[in-house]
Amino acid sequence: MTSAAPDAASGGDGRPASQVTLNHRRHSRTDSASDTHGSDALTTTPSSPCPLTDGGDSSTATLRETDPLLMRPSSTSTLPFRNYHTSLETQSVYLESTPDFHLPGGPIPLFPHEPVPTVKELRREIYNLFRMMLPITGAYVLQFSMSVANIFFIGHLGAQELAAAALGNMFAGVTGWAVGVGLNTALDTLCSQTFTGSDDIRMVGVYLQKGILLMMIVLAAISVIWWNAESLFLALQQEPQLASQCALYLRYLLPGAFPFLMCECIKRFLQGQGIMHASTSILIFVAPLNVVLNYLLVWHPSTAIGFVGAPLANSISYWIMFILFVLYVRFVGGGEAWGGWDRRCLQGWRHFITLALPGMVMVCCEWWAFEVVALSSSYLGTNPLAAQSILLTTDSLLYQLSLGLSISVNTRVGHLLGAGLARPARLSAVSSYALALVIGTVNSLFLILARKEWGFLFNDDPNVAEIVASVMPIMALCQTCDAVAGVGSGILRGQGRQRVGAILNMLSYYIVAIPLGIFLAYPLGLGAGGLWWGLGAALLIVACSQVYFTMSSDWGAIVRNCQSHLQKAGLEETSNFGEDELEDDRLTIP
Image 1 (spheres, rainbow, N blue to C red):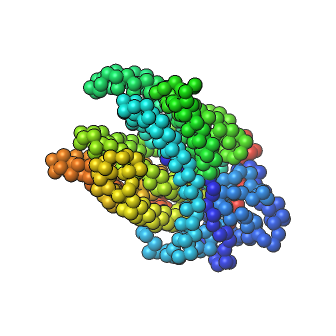
Image 2 (cartoon, rainbow, N blue to C red; image 1 turned 120 degrees about the vertical axis):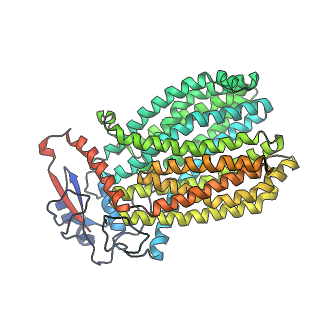
Image 3 (cartoon, rainbow, N blue to C red; image 1 turned 90 degrees about the vertical axis):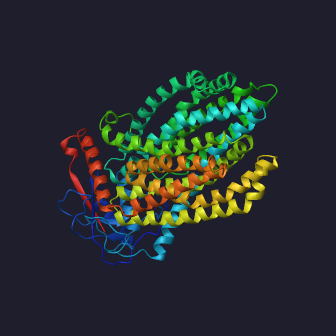
């Protein structure tokens, strides 16, 4: 699983535009805005209301042109909440490019009945997405480096310890991290849409509280599983010594499960507000510290405690990361969306669960499929297994770019849909697919050019390096599909359509990828390359299907559905205030 906010040119050229009316309760100051901002203001005129409102009079309002960084409100903003300002500023950004903006009732084709995106629009949106993805990619690369450091230090203790750590990390990912990350996709959708669409920015914090409560249930389940992992490994016919060491690894990793899951919630809470750089800022400190902790607890002659030092170092690092995230929200940014613990976090769970459960299926299906491929490699022999480990590590590293873009477009689309902007949201989706093609092409070229030397960076065995070199061209063919599929899943999360992604992943990986890969690897004798052909076929199906389902979406209906859920959440809010505080002031802008 959402920052430096997207950078875009603000303002229009005075061409006529239909009006968009936004409602907000309490403390509206449109009159003072008119008086204060003077000649550099935008003056608006009444027109028909948008589905964002419940009708009523439209009044003239004056707004100042503000900082073109979408998620950075001006210090002179007179609006009571940051998300109001964001919604208005988002409208201003797209005023020039969408003079006839409306929310049609039926499905929206690729752009046949409205202005075709100009090169300037596409370039600007691609630039926005690129700027958003850079800090996210950096954060995930740093987080990935923590796992690499863990394996690096354990690997020098011996083959038995390395095997136990690898199996422990895989078990933790399958039974814990994948489930938590998947359930948190509900926050990917709700935090971004609520930030720009809700009357109360504190609803973003309410959704964070729901995520925390759900993660506590997950934590209780994985605690039982991890603590009794040895009996599970023995039941799976693992060697007793390996099962014992792996269970020990998981027990020392268990204290870090709580802060890890909490960090995943807080990251989405901040990303939903457009704060993407927080993770990078924190991990720039935590990732090197993790290396130091691994050295002290695994290698250092005076302080080393051996094998268990590596999972303990990770647990300590996760706690430090969690504390820094809390301090960041409290003292740096994002805290305005946290209104304290609210009883509303116990209400309205149906919509949250309808997003969380399909999101879990969507993430777990892909995560588990790659683990099945890794396990299948163990039956090919030692050299193919070693080569497959190198290939999967390389693929994970290259995927960080696509992952950063996926989270960026998830947040971007969610913000625009929450603000009621259907066409700009679709424009962002198109731009993200274009950028994904570029990323996939760059990754493919890298794999082809580096294939002969890459294996020797991880292993001195020429047989292993030869297998790596033979499979990397197949991996290269998968990269574009992998990037497009990652972006497609981000768009689906931004739309709140995790169910579509869950169905596509389940069918593609378990009906196509795994059966086809095993058939090619064993009966046909293609080995590790056969497993990758199976994955490539699944990624091609997922990528093409997601492009179809996202670009043929009824974006107007998605906006209306989003506004409907936001309105229901708002009704819960209004019950907490007196009638004298519920007078609606209308703010009408182009």
